[in-house]
Length: 236
Image 1 (cartoon, one colour):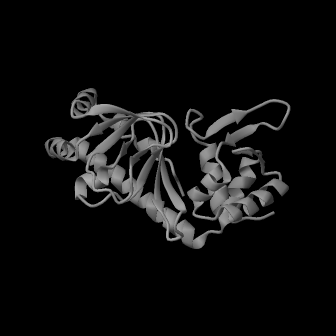
Image 2: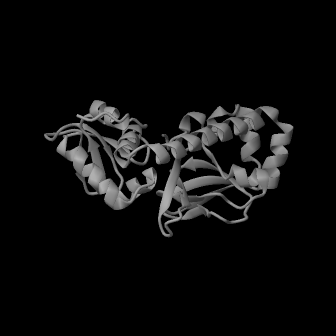
């Protein structure tokens, strides 16, 4: 399971000349927190490169108002490329976690650029391949892992993430130290494909085993090794 794909950040993989050429294709745009950069089902074709801030990529589920968060995208990452390449409706909604600056490029201009720059085209293919493989892993996890396993895996992933990201920060002081993941329970539920009630039950179990400590929109990881074991299906 994995929400983060920043090791494949598109803009960071470009040469200086490629970066300048790509950025010349479009214009910057700013978004406020919670704004929709793209909406599932839309027939827009533009792509975006995230410059500053973080966004969630999510899809609506069969349960109506609920959603499943498929990924977190940060600085340097490309979003919206699938609709630009295949001309189908948007497959997911992209929402700003906080203030976001993105570079917007028309789909036609981006496709022409890729046709003339095979190396950049290969970077897009690599990113698509990574995300498709990750989506397969997520579907497998939804089918085969318990809510506790999926939650433990997600907390492990986010607690190891770059502290400059949107959800994590180190905690120190008189209370136990560790890394805190700053997400509300309904947001956590959306990252593991579970109900809020099921996530709350799993968090209670983790608290009783002193694996985590919870607060307002915060889960502090106290025992990362045991959390990793629980993610693999081991129990005390």
